[in-house]
Image 1 (cartoon, rainbow, N blue to C red):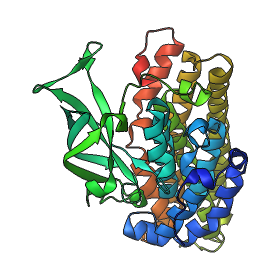
Image 2: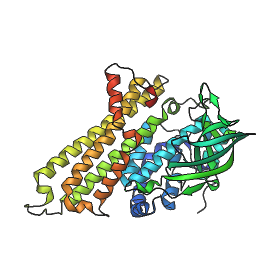
Image 3: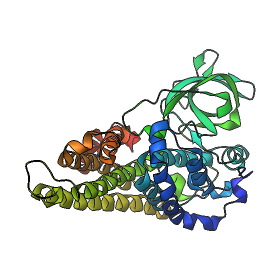
Image 4: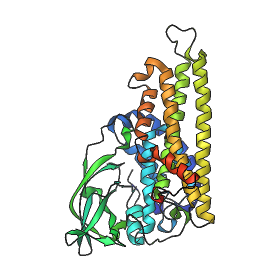
Length: 398
């Protein structure tokens, strides 16, 4: 089947309310492809296309452009449903759909071309501005070799994160170096096969390379954001915390999947030198009870914080520092909580969990990659603690 010419022709505003159900319906397809996702370190085309055709990558794109602009609680729950099927797929979704917030800060015609008129459009980005954007008539000439570009193999565009160079020096804007995301068609970039990890392999977070490619100015956006084409609540929240919301819920989804895998193992395994099945052991029962309580409480805190920041943005016109600190704390705690639970389950599972192909082993590897992301830094606890103690904090981390 050929890709639709434009998502605007296939999606309607009412479709946003169906996204959660669409995500649930995609679960069996994603689970059926889980081994291929892990082996090939990318989303298979049938999985990616089904997700794109359901509108999942347009959740953050403004409605005035033809996107869905759904509320943050809905986006987080959609990512959660995908995460229950596969962590890497959910991570790629969260990264791709959240980057769509930048569409609200671009020239409308260019943003519409990138996200709506390009079939099944996804932009993969890079976090560190190491690229160079040399000023040229009408735009910039981009040179980049950048990493951590999640989903770059299925992306339509790569966002080179660049410092603007003019007359051989970094151009200043409001007293600071001017930094832009410069959106390059993927056909003009080279994907470098660098994502060789023990966990979250399916995210396909490779490097990409761009060599002296011209990008018109309207296909760039200031990293710090500037003018905005729509004033919806989605765009009054720090983008880093939107990313964090998805990352936190993915971690909890991994913990839930790991616990489910333990249920199956505990009902069939007879531990050596012990009587009965693994499920009959008091330690197993303790771990299961504690894990169930922790997953539910961690999720409740996360969704409470997500709803609070959304309501602030919608009703007060901004994400207050209180709601930002709460969400930073909740997302970090979700990730750190998930890793502790999975380590307990892994330990209780014994030798079975050490082998490739065992789902508990995969969950163990996935969660330990997630913890290495900046959203899971232990220093975020210190940040929240400082605020709660009435001390000044670095709001740039919020």
